[in-house]
Each structure stands twice: as C-alpha cells, then as structure tokens.
Length: 171
Ligand SMILES: Cc1cc2nc3c(=O)[nH]c(=O)nc-3n(C[C@H](O)[C@H](O)[C@H](O)COP(=O)(O)O)c2cc1C
Image (tube, rainbow, N blue to C red):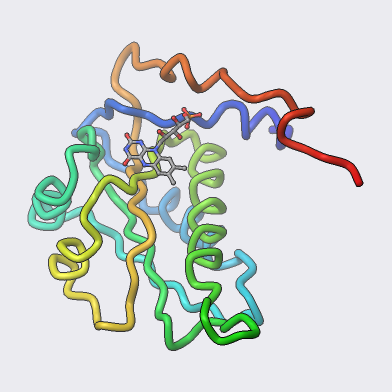
C-alpha cells in the first residue's frame, strides 16, 4: 500500500471486537517494526509489554477507560538510564525514542489490517505500580490493538487537519 494511503487509513479505533484475537504473526510484524525504529545514538532504551492475559487486560481497565474492548494492549516504556541525554544534562530522549517505536508499531498494525488506538489517558504513577516498573522505567503510552467492531468509524476529527500553511514555515 502507498505510504500516504496507509497513513490516511489509520485512525483511532474506539470500539474493538473483544473476541477477535490478533494473530501471533501479525503481532510479531508489529513488534519487528518497533525493533527497527531509530533511537538516539541507537540506545534502544525501550521495552514493550504485550498485555493480553485476562489479568493484564483487567489491570489495563483499572488504569484507563480507553481499552475499548481491545484484545491486546502494548505498553511502551523507556529506561531513563539507557537513553541519550541532551547537552545541558536536563533532558533525555526517552519520550522521543519510545514515541518513534510506538508510531512504527501503530503504522505496521494498520498495514497488517489491525485497528489501534494510542492512549495516554492514565495516571503514570498508578500505571508504573500496576506494571511493576523499575524506578528508572517510564511508561510513555499504551497501544490498543485488534479489530474494530462492526460499523465502527473514525471520529469526525480524524479528517480535520490544519492547513499546511499553518503547520509549516519555510525560512
Ligand atoms: C499522544 C496521544 C494520546 C492519546 N490519548 C488517547 C487516549 O487516552 N484515549 C483515546 O481514546 N484516544 C487517545 N488518542 C487518540 C487521539 O484522540 C486521536 O489520535 C486524535 O483525535 C486524532 O484522531 P485519529 O487518530 O482518528 O486521526 C491519543 C493520541 C495521541 C497521539
């Protein structure tokens, strides 16, 4: 599929078919796309948790109302001890690295015919505790994966993009 066509096709799915599982080969392809993502200095500080057991999905539901019935959720974290630190020593690239990994996976999911939704509606401290993360591991996002329920459509704001003239400046 043409890349721009793929990017247009992806939308945030807000209702999944809970009983239609993600095939292991599709999941592997999605994870591979994340593995191939660039990270600052190729430090690869990310870790992906595949949440699909009944217990894990219940835990997700306690963190957020936004699983929307997805049968599988990926949690993307980074370890702040493993990532690049910007000159000045105040900021690191962990959120950028993890976001690129997550974006690769989200688009690979679309290419594999899966629906997805990127989630940040959770309390990071509560999530870190629930996922039993080490103090250096930061949860950046959750990614619902599965198949959209019958008749599910993108929300109207999916089509609304600011004009390029507003988003881009040439200097
Ligand atoms: C950083 C980020 C956080 C988001 N968090 C949530 C969320 O917690 N719950 C939700 O339902 N959608 C969430 N979304 C989905 C957005 O609301 C959605 O991407 C946006 O409205 C555009 O719609 P589209 O993805 O269908 O084009 C998030 C998206 C991004 C990029």
